[in-house]
Length: 228
Image (cartoon, rainbow, N blue to C red; front, side, top):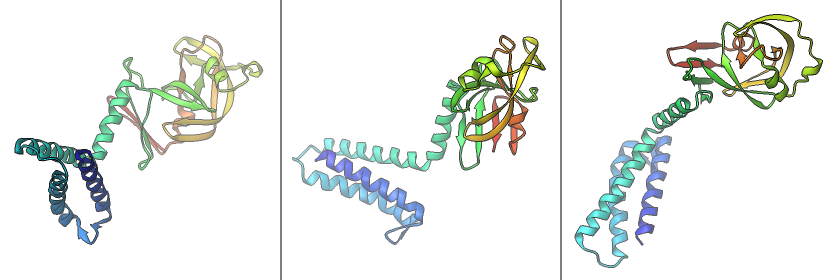
């Protein structure tokens, strides 16, 4: 019966908390609901005790304290759910810099600076996940030949006639149009990109042909925010 009491407590508490967003619960205001919740807790606890074998007062008080603690934790988790989600997302971003912290309501994707000092971005090109480096100095999205092939681009038919300057020196690239490029939930079609010839580039670059389609992008000390 103790498990039934706990289940009832959690179910009723969550139902009341969720319903409170609508402004009232069975005709009660949020303030009245908040005053009623402790009484509901006590009612369930003592009702559960009536249907179990007689227990020492100390054990009943211990169980009561445990159930109240569970309810308080559940209530705080609900009340601060936005902050908790934000902290969890930031922790995930620190552990995996290329993974975006997406805010669908604001239309933003935020990335944390990597250990090497760059902003690493996991983009999806034609359905293939491609690690890239955010680079405002690149006039276009630039792909390594390996990333281009993984994204389904036929590199054997490309003509590498465009001179480009990369971290490895001067090289040549071919112009292509990407069917789809998605970064942190922000999707674009037909983005112009360059495919660098073999050994000309170590990592693909997220350059201006994508960035200029955004309404805003901003860089702070340790974070990059892209806004659709």
